[in-house]
Image (cartoon, rainbow, N blue to C red; front, side):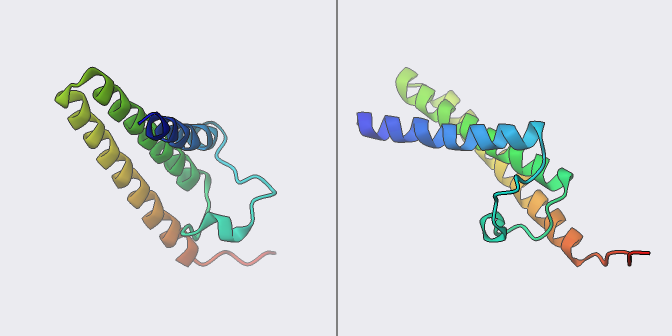
Length: 110
């Protein structure tokens, strides 16, 4: 049981830290390889900020699930599910924006 709790906390941190970074600083670090950004096609500041919010919301949902298990309340668990679903919607919208930005023709350099 404790291993599961520790893994959930690590997963929450894994979502919160990079998500928070992209909310505050929506740029891709130079060391990131293109394959690491899959399934994103275009990485504008808007897309990265939305991806960051999705990560933060998923991390919060995981922590809410842990709190619901500790406090044994169903309402907190249901609220965590709602937060998770909102995160999925934000992620899907950012992915759609990413695809639409990748299809948009770029202006020729003059």
